[in-house]
Figure 1: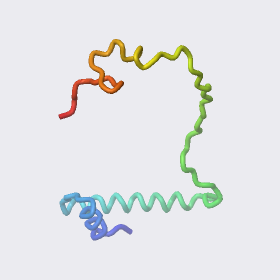
Figure 2 (figure 1 turned 135 degrees about the vertical axis):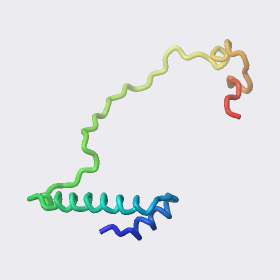
Figure 3 (figure 1 turned 90 degrees about the vertical axis):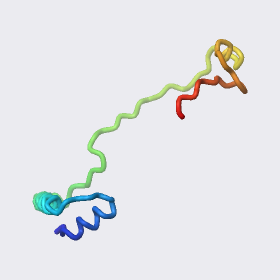
Figure 4 (figure 1 turned 180 degrees about the vertical axis):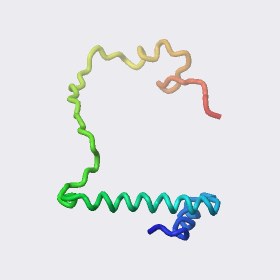
Length: 96
């Protein structure tokens, strides 16, 4: 059972500011959730089922090998840049 004192302690640790009636509502909601969890635990054979950590099938894409083709030099890559310093393109500052 979740007590109001436990909720106040958690709210304090998480720096939440809640009214007294909000604690009561939250306590009732937790009680409902805990009762529902107890009902799930009563299903026949539930103890024999392996817990799932991720319910979806993950498909692994097969990637091709990287093959270098038509490589250009650094000078060619920077040729059309407006502002270059130390072989890097300089851009206007966007963060102040």
